[in-house]
Image 1 (cartoon, rainbow, N blue to C red):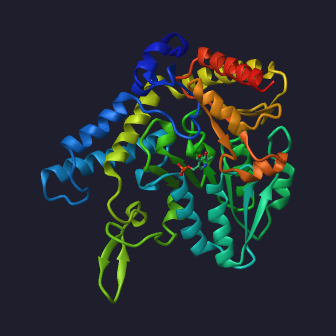
Image 2 (tube, helix red, strand yellow):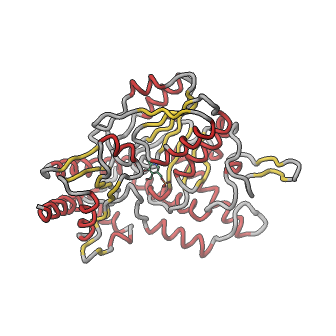
Length: 409
Ligand code: PLP
């Protein structure tokens, strides 16, 4: 088992950006839930892709096109193995989590949702896993139902069970909340939904980089995530869908690649996964995402999880000692995120002053306004950790907050 703590210097050396100085301070990057930094192998893969393998994919005639196509399809296989999908044809490349949710909301919704039906989401969802369903409900005259969470940040599963009925067509829920850090009991939630014959979409945007995900063990019907949050490039993401659903769903967008034959009288569609991949895909991004996944797998997701849990526990303990600091999201089952407010200091002011000390955090509603509404606040200061963060960086954060606090006093 790799001990990240004793190898942290070598790991940090893999990430060129971590050397950066900000206002003459070493960068302390704690905005990983927004996006992660990239290891040199991922950056190199993008450079090599464009400098050595660049040609449009699935146009097999010439050599470079074959190389590019094989690399792109190998990347799909890497993602399939990473998620333990039954087949790589269940892996659809998208622009990210947002596009993947929109794809399902549009296509599944087109086929299976009609007036009077219901979709269930939770109160702690990112806007990306709320708004596409609201748009679907508006289009179809369907209704959005919401699973509430308690003040600790745990979903109320008894309400969840009571919301499922014969009108329910789909449940869409985050595995890990980007604002509260709660790890939701998605396995149990999927079992409950399936007992009623209802499929489930899991938003894994904040999960795949922290915990082992096995879509078949979970029995998830759809699973979505973004490349840029797991040390890969922006602009590429993944929709996993069970073949039995994807086969029945109509195309999301029309264009090249997604067709079998086109005539003005009749167009037929390509097989999975190409039916859902209209136009030229980000074929360099996909290979860089595969590189990022290999990087994570080489270190070992269990090792990452163990190390980050240590960081989270240490940060929670140290931050809790600051008088007037309140942490939002205190679930016993949490990942890598600490959302907080300090006294009456507005998170924006705190974040701006911490930035002057080289500490990068996120302030605002984190695209989860219903979470803010739950607590009657408008924003929090959020620290979020990745595998390259250190215990010393947590100390720097704590010292930084104390310093800003004294300024305000
Ligand atoms: N879902 C969750 C839980 C997220 O944290 C995010 C991004 O912060 C998204 C969805 C949207 O991801 P993207 O902007 O990469 O599409």
